[in-house]
Amino acid sequence: MSAAINLAAVHAFLPCETPQRWVESAIQDVPTLLIDHANCEKKAAATAMSLMHRHTEHPALLNKMSRLAREELRHFEQVIKIMERRGIEYTLVTASRYAAGLRDLVRKKDPGRLVDTLVVGALIEARSCERFAALMPHLDEELGAFYASLLKSESRHFQDYLKLAADLAGEDELESRLSVFRARELELIESPDREMRFHSGVPSS
Image 1 (spheres, rainbow, N blue to C red):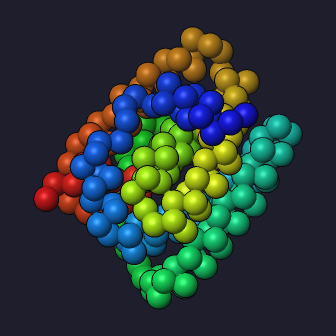
Image 2: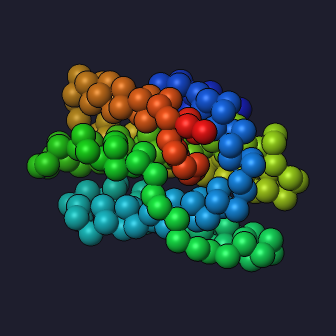
Image 3: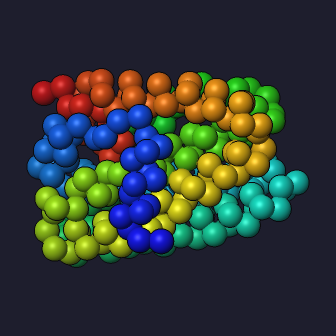
């Protein structure tokens, strides 16, 4: 599947495109962008591992999450190497409100909790893919090429999460939950944020 086809699916899934003001803010602070990108890759791997530990009864989930965790850790290593070459110190930065804002809506008990967690994973991966594509034309050659290389895997991750959710939930339940989480995602992406992060909203300054 080509990157263009993957991006078409991503754009159809997300409730909005990344605001241009976020893109402008991100390309003005590439060190923070890379640090938070590294954090996102670590968190994505940790989420996949957590799902594997909690849900050993789902073979398809175990296979998909095992592969996803390995890929996310590989991406983490690649980001760290780019930072090292650029002399960017891996300092602590605060997390954006994005992932926590989505997870606030996750139901407390399974199987609803698992379905919602997979929907959140699909949104996070789709938004990551969409932002890589939005940033690519504005970055230097090395970083632009790196982000281009991530498009295929990130769009596959979003589709893997979504298929797992669809396999667990009926069509009506899945559409209902997607509607809830898309509405929250739209709010988080388009509302102001004081600090630029990989998944932050529109910069307030």
